[in-house]
Length: 350
Image (tube, rainbow, N blue to C red):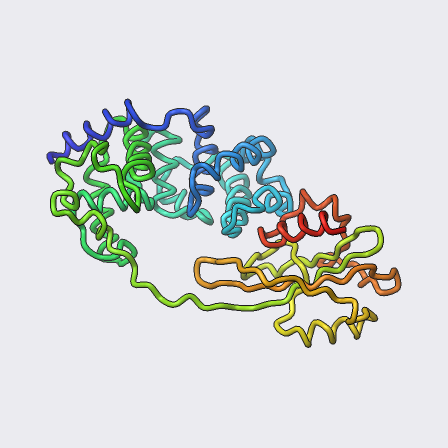
């Protein structure tokens, strides 16, 4: 298909079938585009909408985000996962406030230099937020281009990615770039989906190599699957008579960095030894069923162990990294999803 025909087919489809009323499109400012694009990394639109609305209600502009404490940012991100995105947003906001007079730069290289903003996110901010020509290559666009162009190989491979970027740069129009880029993302998200794509509704179906060769299910080439390792941990849930719960702040790096969580032990024996050392009767421990939380690169099997009625003399001294919180006042804490589920469960049990 000639390039102008490809562009026109995509834009005409967008006018009829694209998404035009997402919350970050009204108003479609560079700030709103930035927040939404970061939230949409690894996360579907249906999940992001509510988080975006709550986040921008509290942080309506970049200055508000830059001035906030990271704990509050993480609290509003709680449950959305991939928390490094929130930490990078906060860091980037402070850099922009200090180095760019509080305004996101309208320059690809300057945007891509900010924490958490790669080439595609920078292109989205430029095109959607500043209405400037810039190509994008998020997961949805990769899928559309790989299928339409019959591009072999896993898109994460450097050679394949380079070819997909070349295609994206070539096909991105000089005019109506914002609508075109939004259309390509919408097309991949709603029609050219990973499984059971709606080829009959696709404006590019007539020239799609994957469809013409009956290879839609094969492209883009999936990454070779590797066994996902399993890690295990025991979480200690300490509840005092006033329904206080002890939480510890996670280290600044690694899984759930900077979030509040329960003390963890890799063996039940170490957990009981810790209890004995701190005057907690190990016979009062209530071991709940093991649950699983899956990360992108491993499964975490975690077993909650509850001890109730912690006496005042046995309460661990508080510090900046270890605090007792009223169980019914933890809603605004930045906690990972498994911890939030356990807190909700404890509220029902106590």
